[in-house]
Length: 178
Image (cartoon, rainbow, N blue to C red; front, side, top):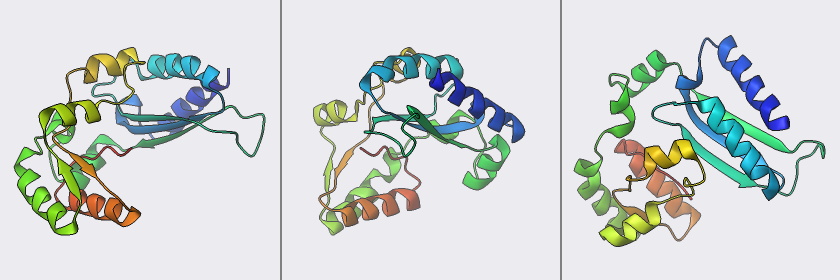
C-alpha cells in the first residue's frame, strides 16, 4: 500500500541521517479519503512500535494532492537526541517532554490577560478540551489516556495565535494547537 511505502521511505531517510524512530518528534499526515484512515493508523502504529514517549501526530483528510494517484503524504520532524539536548540546554530524556509547566502558568496568565486572550483553567473545561482524537490509536490511547493540559488558551484572531506561540516559546511551554 502507499502508506507502507511512505513509512518504508521514512525509515530509509532516518537511517541515512543516522537516526531512528526514537528521534521522531512529530508526524503530520494527510490522506485523501476517510476510508484510508484505519490503514494509515495501523501502519503508523506498527512503524512507531513502542516509541516512548510517542511523537506528536496529526492526521488530516484532504481533498487531494497535485498528483491524483497519491493517496497519502506524511511530514516527519526528527532531531538527533544529542542535538535536541543541546538545543534545549537540558539533559535529553523524558524530562524534555514531561517537565512541569505549572510554574510558568501565572506569568502566562498575566501575559494573556494583557493581550486580551482568554485562558481557561477550570478542571472540567480543560479536561474536556485537552483530549484529542488519540483514542483511535492503541499506542497513543495507552500513553495519553490520563493526560490533560494545564490550561486552554482561546485565541480570537491569527495575531492572538502568534502572541500565544511567542509567549509559550519564551516561557518554554509545550503547545498543542487545534
